[in-house]
Image (tube, rainbow, N blue to C red; front, side, top):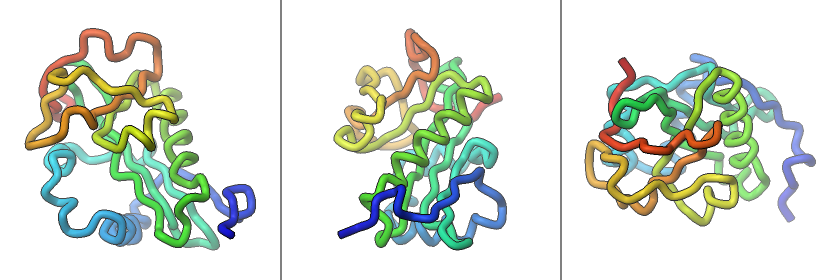
Length: 170
């Protein structure tokens, strides 16, 4: 049986530049080469993620999971785009991804951010507080299943009236 999160000697911390190669390997393992064709990747090409808000899970000095938050805007509203979220295969289903999401959201809120959105699996993200954004309200730079665009309001009403293309922040 797999160990639960509390049974692992994990440390969670902000991402550092030194983590980049390992995170890239974890993302390649999780998503394969097709990850570069996704609409979210088009966004990340023009907007770097924020190291201070992104989080990693470290076990015995090795990164075993990560989540990144990228400052962007939807129309005129500043938001964060979440992703990728990935955990090494041997450490899945132990709560690491959920903990990374929680810690990243806490860091974002503490930094004064108001909302996070992502393109992802409803079954995974909705129990964690993410809700579908209205179809047609968010325009990604490429094809995307709009029913998979979800948002987490860090303050009440953060997504009220939010509409438009996903663009780099000014």
